[in-house]
Length: 213
Image (cartoon, rainbow, N blue to C red; front, side, top):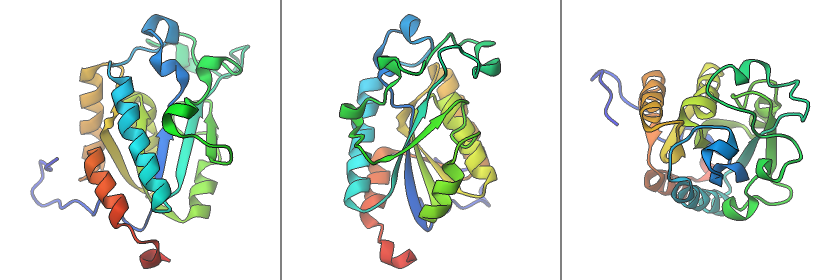
């Protein structure tokens, strides 16, 4: 993606140590919209396939993979204002549909897992503590929704001074228009924020942890 400001030059895709954030790859992403309770674009299976390839590459090149899971208590006390908009009740604790789609995204016992009660993976979670422990500087974001949980996690990461990258063929929005608008908004915050999975795979392959040890 080319910046509209010619004086702005994008940073490298990876700056320092990266971490791959797999946001809300849960079983409900395959459900019909009326059952999942969340509007979304088609193409989830194709996005999952591409994202799983990123997980495999991250594991191969010793890049941390962090799975983020939206989950709400059955009495819905932690939804807050989340149901005031287009979304219906979703991601209820204990339901099969709320689980990480482990077999599809290669989620393993012992992997880093961040449960969240709000859209941003930073809000009310220990993600920041984990990232500091991992000495991560670049966050690579996949998952959904582009205009909701991806966008708000990106913004919080940006405000915490991380280099944030959104893999645009591994994220899907509540609609195509919302997806594209959110991608533009993230690129506005960080020139070079948008990338494709093929480029990220190449960047992961070129990453050498010894250079930033």
